Amino acid sequence: MLMHEETPIAEVNRRAWEALVRELGIADAVRFVQQFAPDLGNYIEIRRSLFDGYDLARLIDEISQFVSAKQSP
Figure 1 (tube, helix red, strand yellow):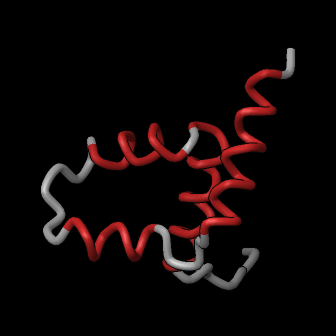
Figure 2: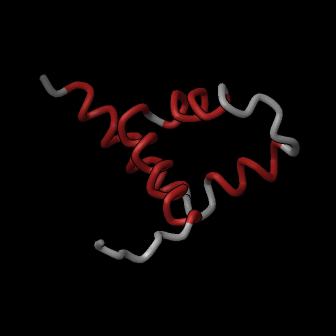
């Protein structure tokens, strides 16, 4: 039996979130996640944890990349 080290759940969550944002865009990624957890509690704290590590430059860059990818045939 092959053994492998379990990925920490925080890393799994980070990678999953990045994949959702990359494929759906930020707005649809948030909408997707919300359908599974309609009442998570403190909206501000949740958003802070979701976007921890994002700054304005990174958001603008990711939005630009997303728009460019959508416009490419």
